[in-house]
Amino acid sequence: MTQVVYLSHPVGPSQYVDELMKRHDNLAVASSWLRYLVKKTRWAIVSPVIAFSASLDSHDSHSPRALTDQVMILERCDLVVQVGGLMSPHMVIERNHANRHGIPVVDLLIFGTYPPNDDDETAAEILERHVLDVALAKPRVPWLPPLVQEDVEKLRQAQVILANDPLGEDSVLLLQRIIGALQKIWPKQEE
Image (tube, rainbow, N blue to C red; front, side):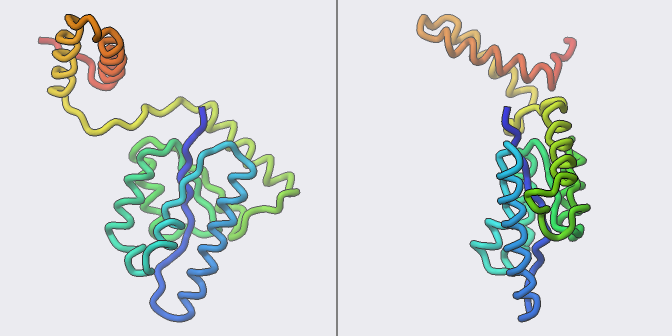
């Protein structure tokens, strides 16, 4: 199964002319990392920092709302890959958030600011090892909207109702799969 990967890169806000130039350069470098990883892996890669920075002004792209949206996207990913040569404050937040949610973090900061050349065999071996480690890792539980035990009970009730519907067989089977997955998360309480 294809892993969905969150690309974490330092971009930085900009208020002054020199910061605007550095931010523009950082976006270009982040894009080069995206191209490199697309070329070298089979990961499906998301990079909200590039999207936010390209579509919002510098102040809005580093607002609490932008960071909140980015970590919500991160929660739905299988892996976080950190690149760009240095760990910015928002990258620390992303790494910590991933760790709290059991999402593996691959640190490629050792490669420096720019992605390796395509013919760099050492870099290719390191990246290949990370790709293999991720592929062999225990698969994450797919994201579900927040549910509580009462929701599981309602699903069980719906399953009983649909069992009496001659056209509900497929729906009953689907509900059984959903309830089975939820029971792994919340085993039924002893009554």
